[in-house]
Image (cartoon, rainbow, N blue to C red; front, side, top):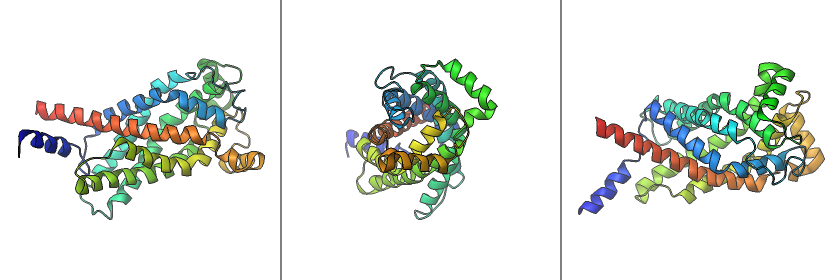
Length: 284
């Protein structure tokens, strides 16, 4: 076996599949990955939000000002993604020795925990961001925050919290076990890690299933009043007004967003983890 083959084997084995990761590594890598994907795909997220808005696409801004709301995203993305992966990997570390049959259950539970924790920062950021993206009156971020607090107090920033959790948990329950399973199987059977296309396809499947909940969550967050803004009421209202097509508003940009985002997100996460772990190995 020559040197190049050894280098390939070492590089391949350096990607942790079931091994534990230090909390700080997951936290930092998640923050980097979240910032990269949210900033890179922000224009597509703006278009998706405006397509789902009850104000209508053109009234919400159309194709104008597609970077409106970027500031809260830049501030919140590192905390949101960092908390998610820190919690996700931290939970997995509690179960270092599980069978291949039990592993998906651990990944599902870890994903649920990660989503609930990261939503403590994600929801306030999304409320401000989405209202900025779809504001018919071109309101500033400061004005949006003042109005939210004046109308509903502190809890005004957590409108749609459980709706967001309900939207993101099914997504994680599908995506993360598939992601972990494919990484493991590709390492065993093909001798290579997942390609970005394969990661993106996993995200696309979950995006199709969770789009109706995402549309409902968006309209709850954009509403100026908390009256009749529970999940079932808004869901039924959308269906009665626009039918199935209304529940899948923003479907194409959401699927594209998730597919591209999955490739960027998991790719940036793994790459950052490897860089951190290589430096830690070098220091020790």
